[in-house]
Image 1 (cartoon, helix red, strand yellow):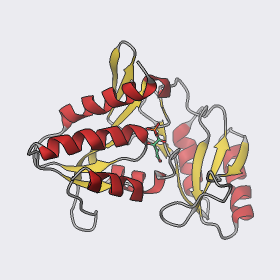
Image 2 (cartoon, rainbow, N blue to C red):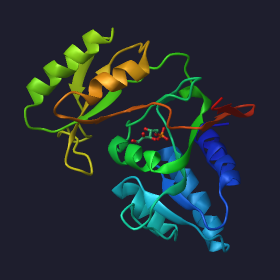
Image 3 (cartoon, rainbow, N blue to C red):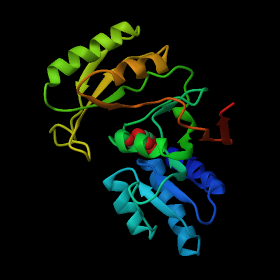
Length: 232
Ligand code: 5RP
């Protein structure tokens, strides 16, 4: 089975948690795209749901699939968000933002009663940090923000190279909200909640890709089927 087939399997399994009338957060990335396509098929078959997209790419994709959309200004809470992840550990802490949508993804997940992470099994790790941590920043004062981030890293026992993310054409990658992303190659994050708190206090940091206690379930597809991690 290919990686992409595994992603689709995880996405298909998440549909078991969707029922008529639900308000859904729609994630971003290649795994979330499978979920949106499969959800679109159910919507064509009569399922009534409404979605809030976590990126402009996802908005376009959901519209293409015929999924009715709304915004967090028009509704109160979401029942469920289904999204991918770059890494997830056994405590359901995750690194997200590889696709650059971490800010909206976190706002949407935090406004949801439940978040399900869908991924292929390779995203499951014992300790977060192998995947570079995305930190979304305001372009103004970048060097000062980077120094403050390095200080926050040192105070929480991590270190590593920081790189401003570039898009394929070599230009600085700009998020849907006009920010930049610093990818921090930390290798190992021994205390993710502590690092998350430290980064939150840095002026210039808009958001970071550590999703702490937001997911309640992970559906991880491997060659021999789906493995689940559930919040205890
Ligand atoms: C986007 C994300 C994605 O969910 C994450 O990068 C995983 O992507 P994929 O499903 O393509 O592996 O956080 O900001």
